[in-house]
Image 1 (cartoon, rainbow, N blue to C red):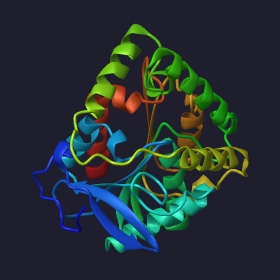
Image 2: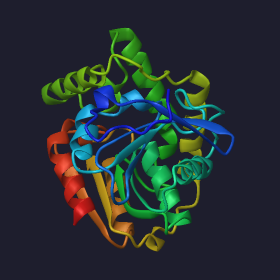
Image 3: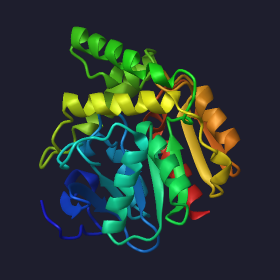
Length: 285
């Protein structure tokens, strides 16, 4: 790992993994794309590390925007222990962003990362220019506290069929969904060198605890987020019911909602050819 900056021409497959120490944590991260203007910081989903981002999404956006991905505290190769609340995860993310010297960023939070992005936008409004919230819902949303059971069932199905759990969690079990899952998981394997450490069971349990707590807590006052927001999801999300994304968009004063048909939690990956241009248009509007 190195602290040297990535070149503008780097693709996700070859992007260098960097490290920076802040707040007592060694954060690992990758960055690519042209500099200038606020970077787009990606925030992970449950059980994800750097190598779980779709290369088509990263490279597509990085063709025109400065992109930063990182492992938060206790995830992948970053040091420390995963906190048990989303608020603490958000604080760690802010520590990382400011350690890189950024005073303003755009955010792309997927699933759990969408919850983290909402907290950052609420607590640090001057830091966030435009949030993108994918496959996520508001704190206190009904059913979100059941995510542990959903994840356990999917992992059991995956073990019985020798498949990745994302087959069952991210994509519908339709012919099109199965093809999208196979294509997506093949893309995740395109990077063959300097791959990240996998998440530990202890770290995943901490994330599940944080998600369950967020599902049971008092809803946030989302009307305080005045920035333009892009909300996206599939129309049949198993992990975060699609109606929660619609509810999230309704509660935000300046939100655009995109729902992709015949897709699930990973709708933005299944429809990456439509999602990437939508993100770029939203950020450059």
